Amino acid sequence: MKNLPRYFKRVFDDYQVLVKVNPDDLTGTELIVHPDGKIEKTEMEFDEEIFEDLTVDEFVEGSALEFNLQLSVFSGQ
Image 1 (spheres, one colour):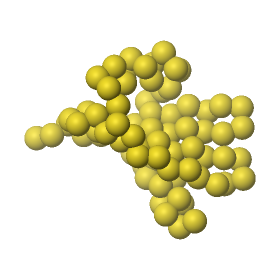
Image 2 (cartoon, helix red, strand yellow; image 1 turned 135 degrees about the horizontal axis):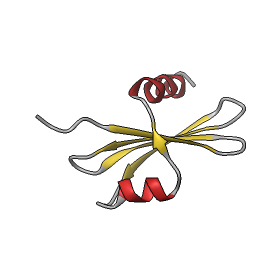
Image 3 (tube, one colour; image 1 turned 30 degrees about the vertical axis):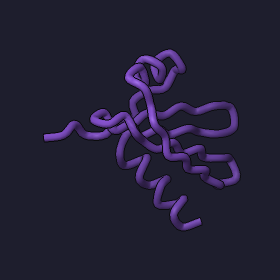
Image 4 (cartoon, helix red, strand yellow; image 1 turned 120 degrees about the horizontal axis):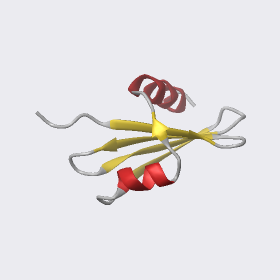
């Protein structure tokens, strides 16, 4: 069975960043949620140090539910 995606988030002063990382192939998605409700989506390719990098950058574990709710808002924009 493949590893399940992992989710991370960080709240900055006026926006939030949500990250989904697929540990099998180190790909994923970044969502930037702006205070006006606008959401930017970027498909990403990570290196093997992504989990350490997210920790250093003060991201915390997030949830699939929160990520996918924001993704559904993006899809509706």
